[in-house]
Length: 128
Image (cartoon, rainbow, N blue to C red):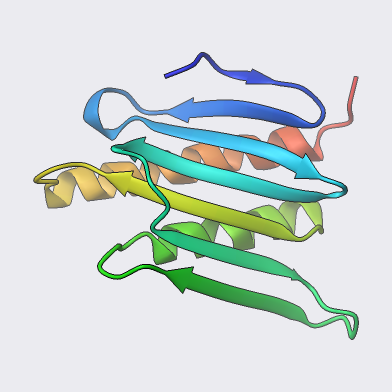
């Protein structure tokens, strides 16, 4: 996986190590944000979009491709990043680990939380 990097408009973060290591790529799209969280045999298994509608209400939408199980990972990340930034956030997620164990699933989810929390802090920080 590539090393971590970031600029004011895009970047890459990692969390964890070994089989459960995740890669989080992010890019600004205008003022909005697109994020991909992947690990193992990366793919797109789920997409979540969270943003504020014209009437002020928060919209949340999710798509997933059965039998993929990244829906909650994508939606949780989109909610957290929208709350941190106030912009519309689209998160795609795809993590595939052959014969994944329940403990590894828990580790993947913790790694995703860590990476998303780090990105939220980074995006809330003023640009240099």
